[in-house]
Amino acid sequence: MELTCPQCGTVYDVSQYSAGHTFSCQCGHTLEVGATEMAATGGLPPIVASDPGLPGFVKALLFFGNMCAWPMPIISLIAWFLIRDTKPRTADDVCKYTWIPFVIFILLSGLYVVFVLGISMLGEAGGF
Image (tube, rainbow, N blue to C red):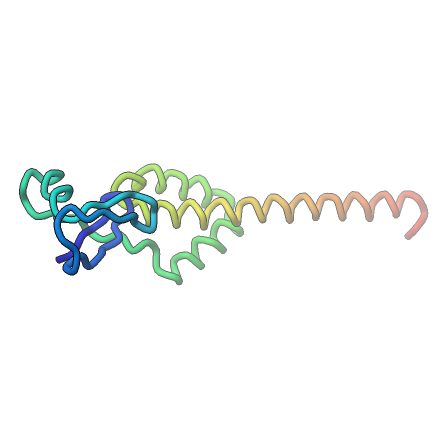
């Protein structure tokens, strides 16, 4: 028997546990074997699509795309708003691989400006 976390989509094999056994999912959501999933679906077996998140190559493309192309963070933010309720893991990946490179881009741009200003001040002072 399998139990799927409704918050993140992780699937657990709970065949060795009896009904009523509770445990915490990796996302922090508390799961109960038996009654909870049947009550949530009106007595029918739960049908929850697993959300494994983004594949590795898509994460890499998203990371470098967000670092190189300016409108990508805005597009990724819109995608996050559209999928955050239905695919929480994928939305979490989109969020991570959008804002981390954006912050890195801002920091590197700031360092570039400081470097260029420093070189120009040295040039004006007669250093070059």
